[in-house]
Amino acid sequence: MHDKRARIKFIEACYKLYEQRMYQVARSILRDSQMAEDAVQDAFLKLMKSDIYFADAASDDCKRYLITVIKHASITVYNKKQKEREIMYLCDRDDLVQEPASVYEDTDMDEIRELISDLPPKYSMVVKCLALENLSVKETARELGITEDAVRKRFERSKTMLKTILKGGKTYEKGRSVYESRIS
Image (cartoon, rainbow, N blue to C red; front, side, top):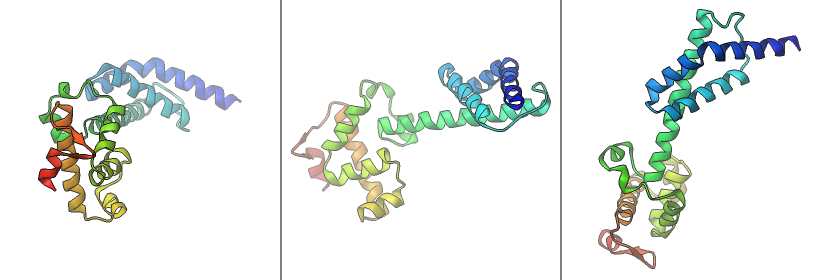
């Protein structure tokens, strides 16, 4: 029981001493206040779940450890948000830079899933495997029984078709678009 109380006091002391510093580190990495707050929360949750304990919360070792934890938590939050954006926009990191977000901001995930379902099956299956199930190109190729090059090409074509639809372009009739009939 004494050990549990000591851990609680240790975590409280760390929070009082380092919460603002950890927020500043996270904010400098993420450049977003809400994401920085999420990272600080995640870092303290990790600290609470771990068996890490320092006799003196103000020690240099404790400070270094907490800064390392917040850096890792910030990177994890960043990667998670980046992956959500990639799935939401169904594009690569390079495409995120090239395409303005305003084109997609009114589109929610349910609408994206519906649009994916409306794609011709050979394209929707690739998108579902890569973007929604988070499989690798190799795993998707194995799953669908096609080559890795075919997976990449179908995903590229799928992204183009979805972007065209989202921008108010061509629509699908009976699972086949004007666009697809030209590329098949």
